[in-house]
Length: 302
Length: 274
Image (cartoon, rainbow over all chains, first blue to last red; front, side, top):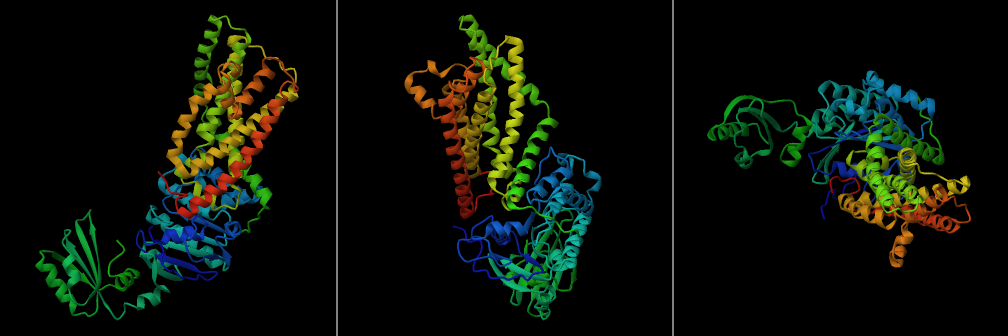
């Protein structure tokens, strides 16, 4: 048996936009599925607005909705507006209210002109925006967003993020649990962020507080030509953690290291040079949530 | 933002049934190619049987039996391939998660699928009846329209309840269950007597056939539509079909809940390609 979640205890306040940040397989989706009544926990208990997700699943379903990024629920043969109407019916939203809600949501996600277009003729990004609109169809008390901007272009993702933030800001009784592996998204959107790794929450605080954790550490970013070898860097004394990303299109790599002491940076530089890597630039960026993750886990989110 | 007005549980489930029925009916209307595949092509097989009976100088009503059987095949295929596999396909297309987290009865969703399926398949069956009547001059002797309506309603109710039972099995066992549909298709054609009356089967095969609701439904429909029988002559069929309907509906409800709980516990309720 795979242990997807391990002794997790987290409490999300009403009116909060809470982010769960972690790499693939960390347990984010498992947690959301338990809270959405799609999975039964093998132990422990979980509540949504004080209602047990196992014993009161029927009630919980009335007050929640969920959007999974990369999914495109609906029927290709129906139009965009018909699809939203269909999902509105599952929540018992009546006639004119359903129609006006569909219209409002299509405007929100920028699909007003596609209302009468069949879903199977939409682009992937448009389908994803429709999926996001579906999540808001019942104006849920608690909304679960599992990687909601996955696969969206930059502009659409920005638009969706703004809508989510505004939705919570203007309705203080609404709560959002968002999972993402996009640092900037969590940083920009969330009131608090829980960092999840191998089924455990290793940190949970406001993004600014979390980032304060690495303020006394030194964060360096090396831009390196080629793909290089970074395994030996882990052994350098004073390296708290590191993340290595290779960009295929430019054949450049980004090495981010969190160091216990600034002086260790020169050792990293020497080690890179010794391994034949060509360093193009070295910067000391402002701490991000990724640095927090590297600091806590010892590696990046990749 | 405008406050959303919600309905009560019953209203919501009724809305779900209507919405799901709408998907099926509109879907068919927007892809009318089914007229060719589901009406004209099946007539080729039916024609072959009709000509075999003609060559054998079989009684004239046998032509009607074949046409009625052919129309009922449309329903059986709809049960096996559409109704049974529906939740499976909803899972594969990403619809199942939104369905399962919605505050609706799963039976309402299946009911909508069933009503939409009955509507669409009835059009197909009517097409087969019309072509059969025009090409082979089949005479329909409906002496008791009430009995006809009752038998049709009970046959559909029991058949589609069986479809709901299958749907819950497909939900959990996906492609494994797919093979069951293949396995059931032809034997049921044979055992239920789609192309000939089951009274010509050996006794033990008739007993085996009697556990299939479509056998009783088809026999009763033939008696009413072709032989001009009334309610009295099909009273046994009505009783058996009613029992089938109630038992299968109860089974479907129980099985669906069981499969859902089982899937939630094992974590593979919405896992794909299993």
